[in-house]
Amino acid sequence: MLSLIAALIVQSAGPAVVPQGDRLVEARKCYVLSMTRAGATTSIGVTWQTVARDRIGDRPVLRVTVHQSVNGGAFDMRDDFVLDAASLRPLSLTNLRQGEVHVRLNYASDRITGERLDNGVAALIDVPLAGPVWEGNLFGLTFAALPLSEGAAFTVPYWQYDKGFGTFSVRVAGSEVVTTPEGPVDAWTVEAGPDERRGLTYLISKSDHREMGYRAAQGSQSLGGDCSALEARP
Image 1 (cartoon, one colour):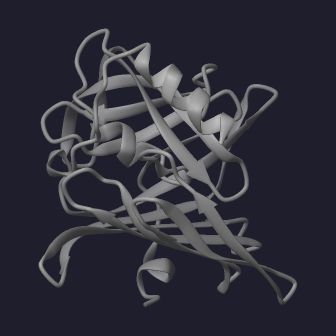
Image 2 (tube, rainbow, N blue to C red; image 1 turned 180 degrees about the vertical axis):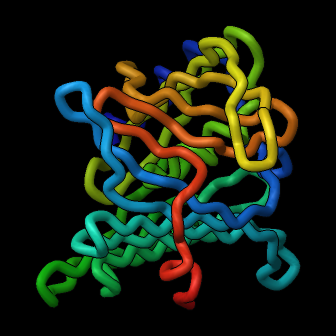
């Protein structure tokens, strides 16, 4: 509970904003994952990401899938999120490792419930909430849904099944042109991360808030690659 209170205190230091789902566009994109060591960058895998609008009863939602495959599938992780379409607050998450369920979560206004499975052993999750949190496994789209502008800075409280409560720290550092197969795209450069160190730089399209990729000291993710094997999976 103290960590959540601390997160909300940090949030009050910047603008009180909520990610806005209508800033995001439906998309199905493949990204190349690269690793940098000793100044050399090599491709190690791909990320398949989809964003789709749907409804659950009368409630508009966003369904987001982020599926990473590294070293030919030696590491395979998939997150399936259901998010409130207006605020991007999470409603559920299913995390799979090597095709097997690792974590199932359901988010209510006052608590997070679910289970975590390790080596076939299930541990129940039941975490009370004192206020709104966002999903700690969803980085780029959460940042893209903020009201980005030159010099803007934000904090967003989250909960993540391994780390618990925390605060995303986000700052718009500038802009640059990203080369894509469809042509050049004007993008914000957004320094962000799960803490104040902001170890990642995301590239977010200025025109439609598309996530163009990110870079960090240890590697990067950029549009491209062959995700056909991941795309074919249900």
